[in-house]
Image (cartoon, rainbow, N blue to C red):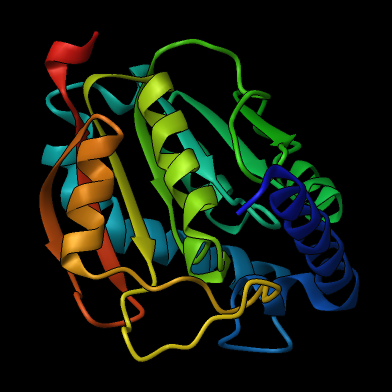
Length: 229
């Protein structure tokens, strides 16, 4: 795909997610309910972080004190998970392509001065300060990106920011029967196990664990190679 095509796709992605944020940000972030209360919405984020973070601290923290860790979240939406991450980790950076979502996330994080929410380009992390991160996380984000090049560039960018040995844990679309169109900003590109492993290797990661192959909840544990830094 040409740079012009990618740029066009990113503009559409930003417009669509801005529109979704204006219509019902909480629903489009977490489609389990259309009428989320503030309390229930952010509590659901805490539950997700407990499920995918607190139960996996050996891989995530690697004997580090969470309060001394700097973490990165890709695709923060309205800050549902970001708040939960900020309650546990010492410093949190979160990015999203939608300016409307970023406004809502910044408001949600107003009482967490160690949490920073930034609007990014939708394909890279150049907006994030170039400092070593201990852990990177993304959930219910890449399943909405129909362009594999964009997803892989995010993985490469995380490698640039992550400390050697650090973990990037994320979920993407693994349902192979899913049909995706390039202009779609809701149904994301599907990855097989071979696709995921090859992407990890190209981007300087070791795919050490995985779960949910063949389903929408395809989780990857990518550890940054130590000999690349």
